[in-house]
Image (tube, rainbow, N blue to C red; front, side):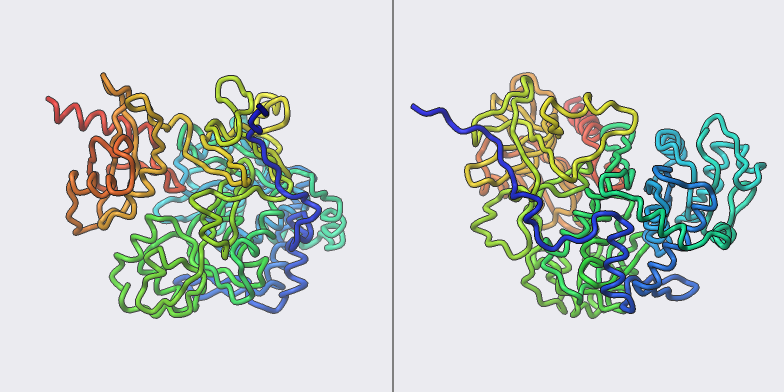
Length: 560
């Protein structure tokens, strides 16, 4: 009898992948600018007016930032913090950093003061480019409170024991003390020759560090994840193909570009296609709908909870969204009265920030019978294996285990952690996610291994259960967890935030799930919460540990 094949699958050779271009961030921007120069690249609506940049404008503004950074002493590998919402200057700052040879270090505008202190210390930024006012936050004041010397120092003269590398801070919205206003910062580059920036950019190799992004911090302090130019730009080029997009793409999104997923999806999907970004710095549903209407957006990139808020917005029935083309009919926006679409969103996908998002996917247009509930096929250059979580040994094909991956978009490493403590002996990143591969090369993801629920001797995937519950009418947000139980090991509990005005009860939800899943997967309990009871990270992930504690407290109160 022959042995069963092992769970290891390779994608096609990277050299055979079509649709790629320059593999540095500066090279990518140069290439899309040469192709689409006078076309609109982005638009931003603010109270003070509307800003529109062409690709040529974006290229010039990025080089303007690059000259200022060179004047500030930025060189090969220097980390430049970018603390901004989705606005034109975010793009000019990130790509300007790349052209100057630096490492663009994106920082979340959801950060608290404690989180900001951690981000600045662990990132070791030498320059910080920030947007001063974001909703109720004043980031200039926050940073000055963290290091009082900032208020007294001259620009470029800071000597801080707390942030020993930080030398320059520039702020959109006004400066004070060491913090320069944006225009003053840009004038620093007036005496820097463009030829010097061009020469600097030419030294950047695809293998050089390009960006430093941070994990969302759903399980602890955010970790700094360093990626090479090649890893980022591969994904920027790929999203045109994933979306099956053309030049008519006008992409609205309010999700922060400081997260790798939205950076690759929105920026790559729009600008690699020759389209435009419809920017909204912070999400507000009524404003988003009006913006999509006014700018004739053809694509919307949103999280599930945002779809629900858009549908519940007061102007939902008043806007004309007939230009929307790249949206799935399965989401609320795709069912808007003015929208007619049969576009398939490429949601059969798997990825991590550590692989700068997607490592397996089925592009838009893939037949459903090929997808069949999977999370994609392996992208070119990548290799997946499924290993026993305890021994690290590869399991037979089709068996469940831990997903491990390596390939051309894999991170250079976590900041402050040796690479040999992150990758296994074969160079694979063990993701901590559970799943399996099948004989056709498809990946099936089943959730975080530490989230898999062990109940009555069976392993249950909360991802599978939530996939059913979220289709139940009246459900806005759902997350299933397991909590300790004396006889079952863990009790399966469905946690739901209902839509406003929806009438849901526990037994009705359980009956709905029972129609589609085996009885042991049906939640033994269903609890209902208001949205403000659930703690979300900035990337809209519910903190599982907090939710479990809340469930235990609720169940204990019922039993008292």
